[in-house]
Image 1 (cartoon, rainbow over the protein chains, first blue to last red):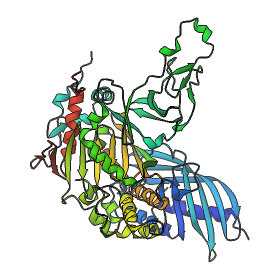
Image 2: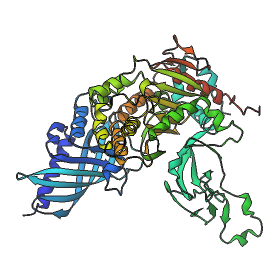
Image 3: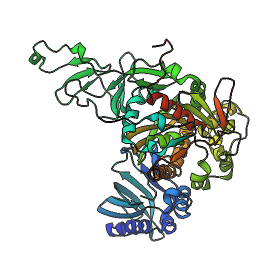
Length: 157
Length: 426
């Protein structure tokens, strides 16, 4: 049976909740070992390896990013910004028994040092079923403002 | 009548008044006296590879178009229609045969000439198109770096860059024999004055403190390479506000030391390249991919910073935009360029492991420096053992504030109107 919209939403909502509550180590386990977390700049590219991104994280880089957020040695992340994100407008682009691709909208508010900032994005997930459980194999965060000047993002989008 | 601040009271050889980061009147003076009377970097040659290519950018607060005309000549023109002042182009880059103002349809060529005016008979002979081209600025280029200036009387770019030229040439060796090309950019703003970032480019002192978390994220060999504050590097004043900070002396000339062992983090790349290139070329590419061992600060808005271009743009007295432009080998191995992109992403940009910490430090300088009145910002580190080379360049140890002192000397020359004029004594 194909992965249902509800199953997929349950998975990515869990991820969003973990990120907003700082459960970064647990967050790592949501990904497949070959999974990629990418925040591209070019709104049209699918060739992330060949273009400059804000983040292009394999498992090793994700671990380093989490370490950076947790160890208190990065002044921009000591502590990391607080975030609240809402996801909605879910659409299943394709789905089968082993994998699916889901796209949704994400509105995120961050608070750090008394400044509230906002980032909106289209987020595409590729989820795969491994031993009965869904894992994130690819997460592509396409920021609405990706080609504009951003401010320091000391958290995981 | 407004009384302008007196810059001579704000900057000394070894310190500056904290208000230089926050005085709006001083900022307005800077935008005029510094950004309209110096050579300002606008583009790299590879941004405009062919006739018809253009980009839009800014000189200080002025929007400009940089274009390459049909003959291949580069023009820098104010992005302002001569009729009512609307911008004639809002794309960041592209290819065009002309720029047409969207308001009343005035059309300009790639060289800025006014080519067409709709319903021109309405002017009953009172509009001579040859009198209304887009306003062109002076343009000169050195080794792929394109600069422009509002001021037609200042010295040539060649004279302005002067003693920085050998360093620019060294920096461009990151092409490993191929030309350099730009490969995208990280763009971000921070709520602080532009000079806070200008100072940072030749500030080695902050590196082990601010970038602890970056150093945590690399292997021990790379950590050692970046452990340069007590090393034998140096900062040197190159004149006209320019300076160079040599952090890793072994990586100054990328064509040298080719026999040195390949660092572990580049071994996989070297192995792959060895399938297509002879050993010496592999070593040359690997060294180029790792970047230069120095930061060259070109007053007031460009840095050739280790492995990328840093461009700053003042947006307001307490708001600055920074671009970190990735560069690579134009025609070189794709794998090498991809590794450069990954290295750039690792440190640079709003989600890098380095830039957000720099940005946090600058943000704090801005906020902290608003506390109190008449309190100095210190610029005296390394002054006690600063010395002069035979060519006259001042230099001191790598963590010295020699580069900042150089920049503020030029700042003062510009701000007090004593801009260095052309050698013919104009």
